Structure formats: C-alpha cells, structure tokens
Length: 280
Image 1 (cartoon, rainbow, N blue to C red):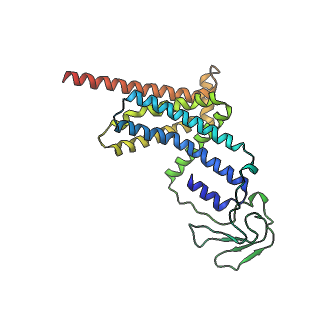
Image 2 (spheres, rainbow, N blue to C red):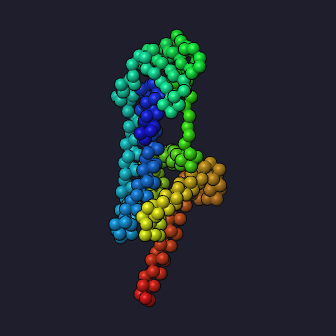
Image 3 (cartoon, one colour):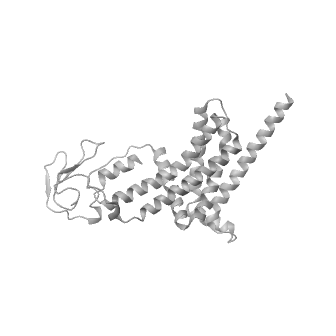
C-alpha cells in the first residue's frame, strides 16, 4: 500500500484521483490481509501449541469480522464527497516530475504547479534541447499522467501474485456491494478453506520451512480461486449446476467441499497417530 501511495504521489495531479487510488490500494491490501492474516495466524497457533479446533474457529471468526468491517469502511469511505476529503496540492509552481528509477529519463517541469496540470510546462529529454509548452494540447484524460517513461523490473511471479490479489479484491468488492450476506457467503467458505490447512504447519520441526510451505499452498488456493472466477469457468459451472443454484454459490461450495475434505484428512491422521501412540 505504501508503494501504491508513493506511485500516486508521483503521478497523480488531481485531488479526486488521490482518494480513488488510495481506496484501490486499500482494497488490494484487504485481499492480501485476508490471506496473510490466516497464514500468520495458523503459524502462530501451531508454534504456541494452541488446540487446533479452537485456533481454527477463533481465527475464522476474527478474520471474518476484520474483513467485513474493514471492507465496509473502505466502501463507505469511497462515498465521501471529494470536497470533504480535499488534500493539499502536491507541490508548488516549478514542480519537477522525474523517474526515480531511471536517472536518464524525461523530466517534466510544471511551471504553474500541480493545480494547473494543463498549463505551461517544460519538457527536458536527455540529448535534446528543452521544450517549452505553453498549453497542453493532447488528450485531456491523460493530463494527470506525465509523459515520462517508467520501467518495471518486478519478477513475473510477484506480478502474477499481485494480479491474482487484485482480482480477489475485485470479487470481494462486488460481493460487498451486493450486501453483507452475499459477502459473508463468499468470504466465510474461503476463510474456512484456508484455516483447514493448519496441518501444513506441523509437517516439520522448523517453523520457517512450514511457513514457506504454507505460502505455497495459499498461493495455490489463490490461483485456484482466480481460475474458478474466470468467465469461462463460470459458464461451465453454471451449465453444471443446471439452474439448481445460482452460479455465485459455485466457488463458495467448492471451497467448502475442499475444506471439509482437508479437515477430514487431518482428523483421520490425528486418529491414526493416537492409535499408534496407544499401541506403542
């Protein structure tokens, strides 16, 4: 979220855009908080040897309340009029916009400051003379983005993770806009599925290794959730349900079913270990 806000500070020249981008970053962070909160909570419960059913139940309730409460706060915050959340202009006349990653990129100087992004400006491109623009005559919808090249060297696996988190956040936002009950009907089975993987954190005596395994499993769940929410898979699931249930219940039912199977596996393993201890 801090990186997103920094990106807004560099690019955005409109006050309303700042609030919009911060809300988008908060939604993205909410999706990350759902997965990350359950992951860290399970790891902590195993290290402190908390009773597994009690830990899972407590973690589910707390995560559900947190996600629902923060989600409603974000949506209500977005309904506030921009005038009520006015921000101070980011800079004064003579503001220079440049790429902090590439020192040899284009530099844009706003002579009238960020409050007049379409006003007089000076463009400094390496190897060419300074260009003075009396008035910006390009597409007015692009005024808030300076014409400077920005590079992105982020590894693909991090990009794919960010994309899936953004899609998950969009799904949560759509369910929350439909009401609290549709939101809970989607979030609770997902949290239940994530909480069912508590046995992953008991596979070895090294907590860090267990945490890494948990990260891989949670990444797989996130990818699976994104896959089932694609329009193509939604059409297939809708045809499979044959109008018996709304297609919006398909993904929650899948999460609930997989979670029950994982919990059944954990229970059977627990019984097998207990019988082996009694036999010894």
